[in-house]
Image 1 (spheres, helix red, strand yellow):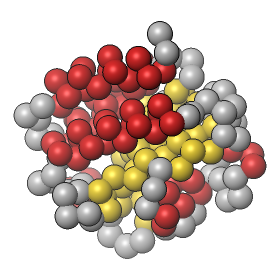
Image 2 (image 1 turned 180 degrees about the vertical axis):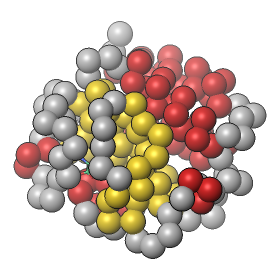
Image 3 (image 1 turned 90 degrees about the vertical axis):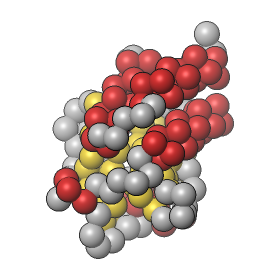
Length: 163
Ligand code: SME
């Protein structure tokens, strides 16, 4: 199965998984788990960093090895995706200036910024692969679609209670 076909199969499953659910932590945890399980061996870290008070992202639900708690605006791939307001694909993390290395297993990375319906920045979806140059436009489209689905579901809820 191609990567594109994998997303085509996964997207309706994720839509069904989160539909009608109001528990944001649960939704984000389940989406992380679904992605992590769908691309075993490759997507070794899948999770969310969420904007809270101040200009920082804080670690949210994820699947994978332990990760750093805080990423400032403009820092690392996550902070850069926030600053630039667009999905960033990093084919080789060692060549990305300022990359924040949480694990030496990470070789390439994609970060998708998340916005609510008022275009307010909410956080990012971050996926790390054990393979160099593992992400392409199929991943960008697939992951952006998944982020759109879950932002439609979590629109009324903030992550504030996690503080
Ligand atoms: N590599 C990210 C940090 C988070 S970890 O990959 C889980 C970055 O540079 O923003």
